[in-house]
Length: 419
Picture 1 (cartoon, rainbow, N blue to C red):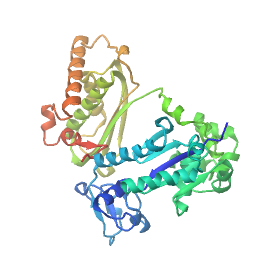
Picture 2: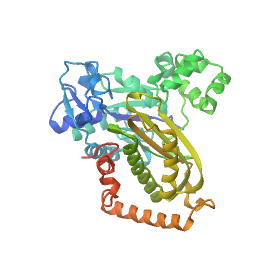
Picture 3: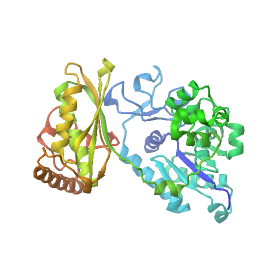
Picture 4: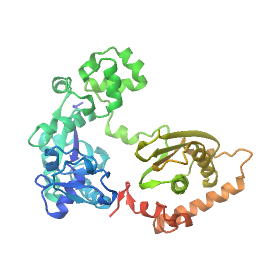
């Protein structure tokens, strides 16, 4: 069996590059940040041009963190436009590769198994990468960088670390090169799937690079990380056993539905409760649409400027349901019990966990089951109407209140302007 070869293709500074293309500008020569100026100096920049990065500006910083004296264009996020560009680029992939061999990792990044195409095109892996990225640049104006690896992990590392060191934006790694080039690389957070928390725990047991991890006592790693140590050990040795098809076929054992939002201004206790009701209703409609029920709720509240400790509360309820009436009552109990009435609120988050098929719906003896089933039918009708006529086709009176957020959020994509 021939050695596997994967590409990991990333669209450089994607959102910022799209905005530059739309304006006829070169992202490598101009300063542009994708950010919503209406959100004030605390707004996050979703992307900045490579030219700004060269000036030392960090990607996804807040507007006030951009050094004074750097003049730049503020481009309001246009998520629908970015999605259209992403679709066009995916169609370019389909010109060269079968859909089964492509895994879309994010809006601006994809993995491709090119193993069978090496002989088909009679080209080396780098030549195939150049062929595809040249087409992307010619067709859309977007520059792409590529990692090539003998497994998915190595392709991602080649993209994230190696491609930045090359003039042609292409990096390559196999297991041997990985040990030679990457084993002593620091910080560990540069590697895929190693966050600050994992790095901190590794440092605590005296491990500072992947060579340290690869040579460490496995028993120590399993005591520290449990079953997740297996992935860490494999990655430290440059091994990844997953294939694109296995990833596509994977079905998570447990699922949840979450929703969070950062408010544009400080909200008091009552106004934030209105937003909570809107969020619960939206999540309940998602439950109805998916035909699932829940019995585990979580609530997160963050106060303005972190003046007091954030609230992280959860509970398991006695019913397994998707009834708004029941779930809202439970969230109200959490909210009134744990949230301060005297401090301004800036962020809310909710989650429905332990999702199950509706056939596992269950009510305790104190719940009105007939009313719950009527609620369920009404929710399904709302889902059907919104699916056909748009999210704002039906609104409740509370959605028209001055502090409500549903109407404006329904026009967003991924929490950002949906133009």
